[in-house]
Length: 338
Image 1: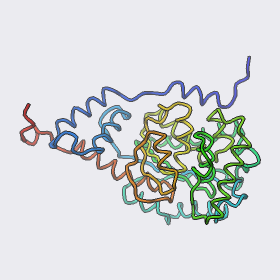
Image 2: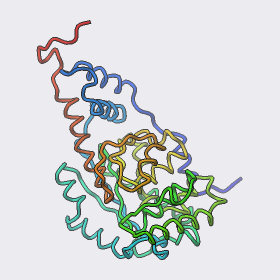
Image 3: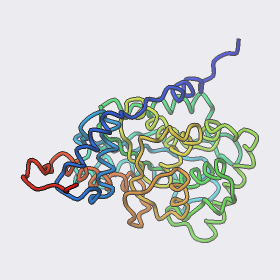
Image 4: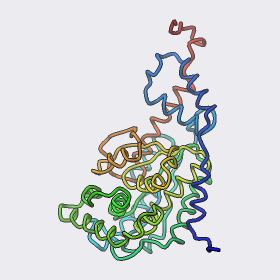
């Protein structure tokens, strides 16, 4: 008999994904048709309410949203892919903790809980141009750690990240999954100059070439090219699906975690919404490949879960309209005649 491998449990979970509740979806659609508005006039707000109902299994709600921010450091920073040192990751985590970051202000504005997960910041992952970022065992364990974001029982989960060098890592994942040229996937990140952009593309090129024989398996892509924060977010997305909790994805880096699951099974991210399209140049193409239309397009590229958290304002408005509007019968308004 073949000894079990760390990824076997992940593959087993992917074979038994729960599906949306068709009865709840039908009920939500029926109610939408009775509300005091022309059918379809609230556009995507109606779709969001129906989406939530189908995954939450009843009346849609967004009473306990959570932003989970995962932070990790990357050995590939040694290749000169970022204008900032890895120490900035730890400094920004402290800023989150002290309430001084943009994500803190957005969470306060929309009454969203925030939890930050530090992932061995003193031990960067391996330099992906020279070896694996993580072993299979460490990758599976980090996915399991990422699943802990669901322990508090959020009704909507927003994902965010922090990690100097992680746009390079995300670009490497996309290049491995989708092909093309490294230049198709790298962007300015935290603000590299033209020479820095060339170094990022070269690092992606070298990394994918180094690991090429293993990259037909998306989980190997994740372990060999990913960072701890991306791996943990993949675990959180999977755990949310198991618990039928809707997820709002943030930008370019967060979507790399979703892309790995999507490559394993395109239906694995059906419970996810795209909060926004990032200014990072390849994110729009990533969303197209994932089949996700963003809720917002504000030219943001901050990370931290900021775009996903902003989208919660839209989600809450969708829920409020669906649950709070009067029906034609309740308002005494004549409905559309046949």
